[in-house]
Image (spheres, rainbow over the protein chains, first blue to last red):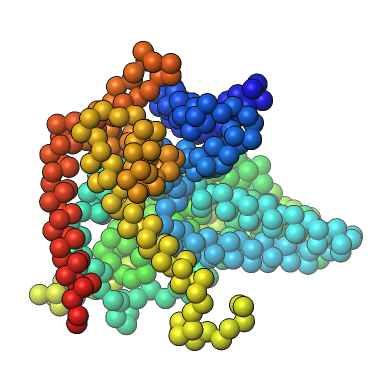
Length: 338
Length: 126
């Protein structure tokens, strides 16, 4: 009898623990009476076993009580999630491969086996992190998507006129370009976070080289650098997902590029982030008089400004072309629609 | 006998056909279950009594399906419930609410119309 009761207790507990607190007490009472009814006076363990088998797996019974299915990432956005996951994971894996190749070429490892193991370990860690970040972002989107406002905009009153145009010719964004950008972003980010001295001068010196950055200062602004790359990655992801030039995309790109420019100015426009000892160290390492001269000093002093100007030109050009194409194609599709 | 040549569903094994029919039948039952349950709840009844009553009437429904369904109908406002604790075991009795009466009436109308249409479709020669 006790064995049988214990079995029932375990079953009821296993069902109710999966339910919202508020419903547990009620369902537990109901379930116990139900089992009792189904037993109809029998109380052997084998009878209880048969009844519980009839009621079925506790997780399934609890799911029926809960009603709606629960998703971390629902079928509506799963397709996009899977596509992005593939692209980003491939980019990260390729980025780590290149980064490790660079490390091992610049600083030949003592043991090849050890270097391969290390590269493998780093790649796996990076892949897990990328996977976690993307999954987290989509899980957040999933939760936000449940909000009423989003639903009103997306579920109700769908009309064929809301269908996006099939991109014609130059309106379509080819997947290759954003993917290449993502791959290079991944490589760059890996290097600047893990081996910032690689941005430097080697001249057959043993690693680490003479870095162009002040590594301590660089480390202190690494969060901003990650944010800068994050903005770039988000931009490419938007390009991939939207897949065509639109005003919406253009505005997003503009906002992200403004953010990027502010970050570039803050990080790389700041003279402190550059290695003040760069020329002195180069002179010490090479003995070349030119590095100690005024010309070199003036050029080196201009580097932050030049980097900022080049970035500004690049970002402004990109923003302008994206805006131009977005406006042009959006207007064209509006015209064609009537 | 899984080695049978199979082209575009031309050759189908009996087992496989039975599976398909079972699946479709389950879908049909799932859709009509609510109507059957509502039909028996003019007077208050508890879950297991309903299972037995429906089974006696030729409709077998698993308690694991019926109990959650009863709760869902209550949440939707079609059923009211009350705990009866005076007996040996506490029992929850369900009965159609005023709203449930109206919905049940409308649903019956839909059912009659639908069965007429379907009857005509499946019994009339093309």
